[in-house]
Length: 338
Ligand code: PEP
Ligand code: MN
Image (cartoon, rainbow, N blue to C red; front, side, top):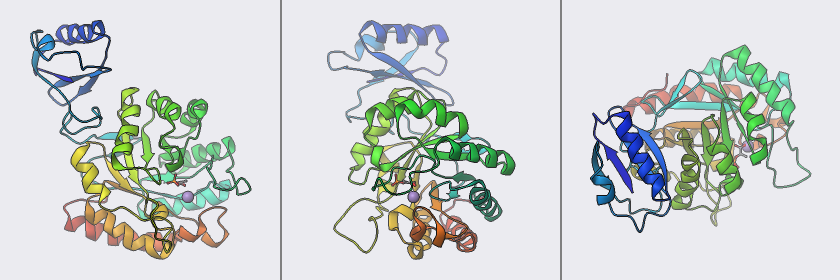
């Protein structure tokens, strides 16, 4: 259930609505639009009646939300979520490009990747410091040292950063070094982690679990918003199917489907989505054409020597030549890549 306040509702009237919600054993959560405030009821609302709130001063109307997710729903918030990561706007008309290596391997490797990313026009740099690897014998990342490298390179290049957080206890530490947190596919339904990033002041990219339905993804995002963090991006990164010639099957249709039901920006990761550098360009063009709000692309100064995901990493040259192609497609669908 959501309580839509009148545009002229006073702060006292809003606070009275919140107090009433608490008195009924639920938690209030505000969604602040340009003109109106919507106050959502978090908790069991089955025994409540809209009239109990409709009579309160300053209330315009009360709506029951039929779907299991609420805060992420377009029913609750019709306009697309827009927020800043450093000086980069996510969720606007512009398409956001995130690029960088799968793993931070050294200062030299990361700064080289970041300089190429910036020169080609990327807005945010990525790199894994804590890596969720399928095998315990694979490179597990540089840990905190990797995050320190990211913070240093961010300062030197002026580009904001994103990196994965794998455990709830690590959220404060990762948030100290990077501008945006990534919840990886393997952790999409790690509820303690979703609660932890929900309490973070950093924006979050939530990647789709490899066997997760769209509804499960929306409900995972709901945890983060219910925790108080509304700055969330959803990222389609391929799902597991019977096909083996690609690493995953990139679900391009997830973009318009998600955009119909949620106001959260939707990104595509064509690198994990295909698993092969040869297919990253075509999948990226498709992502822009289908309306994605951003892309996250793995790029490594020397993919053949990468400690993780070299097969799917673009060379700096391939990445640089892809950007103008994406700009042409963006123009065709009335978007921009600045
Ligand atoms: C990554 O972005 O490097 C990564 C591990 O992605 P995913 O969680 O989608 O597998
Ligand atoms: Mn990777």
